[in-house]
Image (cartoon, rainbow, N blue to C red; front, side, top):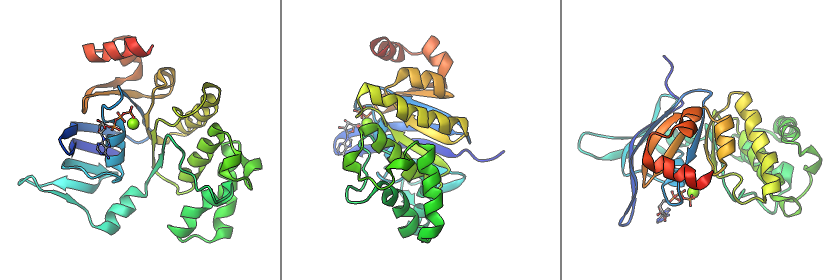
Length: 254
Ligand SMILES: Nc1ncnc2c1ncn2[C@@H]1O[C@H](COP(=O)(O)OP(=O)(O)OP(=O)(O)O)[C@@H](O)[C@H]1O
Ligand SMILES: [Mg+2]
């Protein structure tokens, strides 16, 4: 059988005195859309950031498409793969943040082609047609020469998605992609993510949008206190949460 796209084993992470991840394990298979829900401070962002090495773990193991990013030996020593290897592994994951993080001094098109040129070494004429296709896909081709300051939040977020896709990732990680948006703008961003799901992009999406999670995710992971409390098919988790903490959270959210 093929390796999972993401295989996280017993991840531990502490910030000073606070143990933020307390043994998190999760497999994500090819084409799966997994939603991560849970209260503020439960470790959702930290978990995502550890997967693509924006944060380091203290203990545990992460394999991406069968390649080891980090593993812990029998003596409890946590070792990351070489810089070159870990860069190559992490480049297979595109990440979209709550606050877009576009380059303000670059146009929409320049934002999308920047990493393919500087990181992958593609020529401008190779990447521009691809970038235009991606902007068309997210409905923003007509904004290609605009600067981010002239865009709505929803438009900025769709540019951020196009920019991540321009690196041709195998996996997309989303950290609350709509929570900085006015309610009337969340729909257009969720629609873009839903289209990626229909194309079978492997995705891990931290979200507060319960309706979206129920509809689009194949599985939902509920995190609380640095642990995965339950991870089950979306329909089951929403219909009959197994754990009282999940039930309490959902009662509060729905
Ligand atoms: N760089 C950091 N330094 C110190 N503490 C941190 C850091 N990043 C996160 N934390 C702490 O780790 C805990 C988990 O934070 P995290 O951002 O992962 O939670 P979250 O589930 O994403 O919350 P939210 O829903 O509010 O985004 C919190 O207590 C937070 O204060
Ligand atoms: Mg967060």
